[in-house]
Length: 362
Image (cartoon, rainbow, N blue to C red; front, side, top):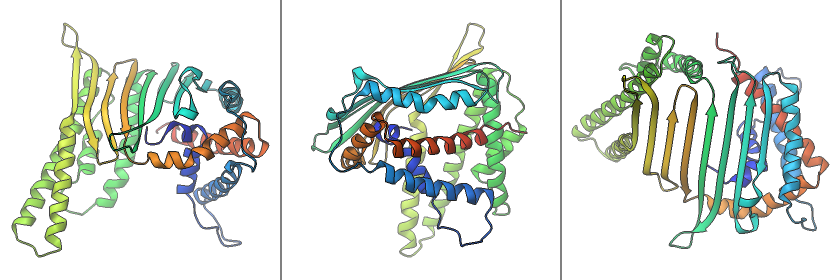
């Protein structure tokens, strides 16, 4: 979630990237389209319009006014709250005290208030704060440092039941594709477990499911390692031997990362679970991402997340796109009509997508 530098998300480059990922060739004239294909075609065209709007005009840009930019962002988000019965308010702003884009520093705060949700009739509130800056490492290469904190106040057990039902539906499709492939896969084992799991009513039951699924993942990786070792023991020729050795090394690395995740159950004097805490410290995911610390705490009424990350590779893209980002932010604050219209259209498209994703599970 913290895969890109904050500025690109604020400027709506992240939705643009998602639209580009859905890009399809234009359909032939007169060809019939499914609703999904029509949505993709709309996003394709909208992505092109937004890209055209993002290109800064010739002649430079005006200095960035964070307060004015926040007002424009607020105006863009107002229709979301007024058009939906479940959404009470939504806020997105740059924090002036932590933002100096000329010095590659930004602080972002977002808050969403729901009157109710598909998993609970009670209100829910999400608040997110992200701080980011770019610095040079020992070799002089740019590194993006991100610190974030998020708190979701909601009825966690109904949310867990909703999420597990969604996961079970997705696993069902995976299992159907894997049917008849021999040994049970992780997806099949997880699907069977969720099929046996009733409606969760306590935090202990939620902890049981999470730990069971984590155990399944470890079991599946151990089986994969054992299978690869057996295949290597048969003495295959090159290049198959090199491919098997590489897969064995990658499987062991995935298993090692599982042990870097430390779950902890906090209980009261009666032995009843009060919180599930999962922490990761000092982990590296490849050469591009270093996790200094991640901690998630789950109670019956809240989910809290704190993270401190360092993006070692990819920051050079931010530096290359920084003039585009600054120019686009300046155009937003000045009320550029073409850019605002494109952002509004993209906002409406993603609103529809979120509504579809949050539709109740039968």
